[in-house]
Length: 419
Image (cartoon, rainbow, N blue to C red; front, side, top):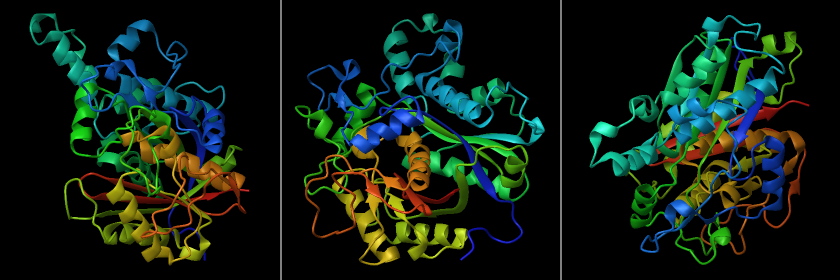
């Protein structure tokens, strides 16, 4: 079946940028995912031995100097730093050597879409600790640092995008929501180009402990690298991660006209709500299955057209089980190959959906699906075709990327690689 609806503009992906626990570039990231070794480790921010969880997946060796000055870095929350750097990388990937307003597109028709699940909550925690007893010492730029919309605003200012600069928060589905909504604006003629993705930096004691007390986090302090175990029978919770990922979405005809490298197209976007529970997924996976079916229908594809699935795969007992049930409901008992990036990078919350969309598209184009890290034994109640051990070589084909968040938010994206 055709991968695009008649009468709407086709959306190309022409640039990718990532700052993740797996690497600071797409090439580094893919190599780490193919190696399938968890990147979680004990971190200084969680060194207090009274904390239930003292490890996370962080973006190591991130050097801000190529992206902004020391003064600018002081005005940017960690989430905004990662977001701006990843967005700048994506633009440089799509427009090598170009500067702001030098994209061959009317700046009024360039938009920004950023997803974030917790925003500047970690920085707010730090600010409160530092200034609770001396409020008169609060730095002047505290409010701009802590605004949830700061990453979108900063990206728009730095990169000269004068179209809508929007922030989306659908918990762990935020990055995917931002990409899907930006694609809609291009399809419907509101934009010609969008810088879309997600970012979060939630590695802070209060946040991590809150997730741990809900029973959402793995508590394997003695073996952090083995803690994130998507779909494995011994999974006991997700691993907190930080990072950012951005995609350049562009009208396909304009991208081809300027001779851009096209990674592929975003052809399908589905979004639903479980309307069930604030943190627990619908056990029968009905909302997630509806979301996947909606994305496939939007792409004008059948389930049999999908070459592999990048699952949400948090490594929590309930979420993985619900997603597996949903996958089987949508694709039947013989699902396409399923991978889950969180085994390596942990859960980057608002960045996760954007990061996994980028990984999914590159994997689909290369025809090489990364294995799930730390997957040893399946849960027999939820059999899906998990890629394990070694990368799986398959013919290039459309890929489905899933993102599900607290609040019952479900988002699925269909991405089709170009030859």
